Image (cartoon, rainbow, N blue to C red; front, side):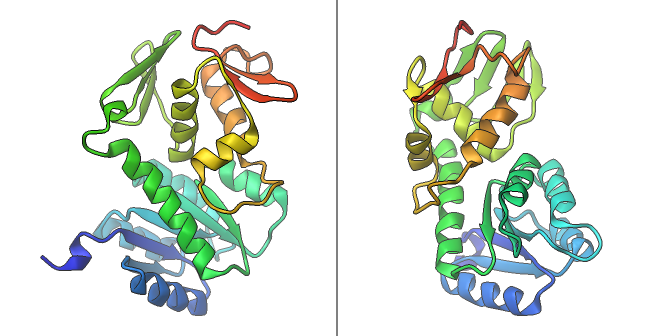
Length: 240
């Protein structure tokens, strides 16, 4: 079997030909199978040909921008997305995460950092699906919810609630550490596993998104509570 048949497939969507060529060559040298697209139309063509394991998505694209395309990738292919942008403001990072991106990297960037993030995102997904992983064969139940750890699926009273890869990873971490206050730094260390910006607010964004899906009143959460000065605490019984 050709080694490329089993190597992770990465789709790079960027209108800058130089970046597409650079990442195709660099990631290819690291053992990935890389395809590229310059806009949404070419991205759709690539997705029709095969489903990638991960998409590297530029935010500023001609026609449909990276935010719109990320929504489509999540709805159709369901694979993780790492967003790139020459605009590094917090608002761009937050909006990117809110539409479902699993990570965000500002341009200019070191290809080695992108590689580390790609590997971290893929590793999180592989860990959940690893054969023989006891957690992957369980369903965590709390309140009216059931979190299928193998299928990475959340349901409420039998009705499925869509989760992004990032949301699933955080919720799984919470259900594995119930009734315990977890600091933002602890959560970041467990979920990301690489050097990070100490002012990274991506965990807060994910918590906000999860609360909207779990809580009857997100402003007064009972499942994922804020413990001031300590972090976040997951209460399976939904009690304050």
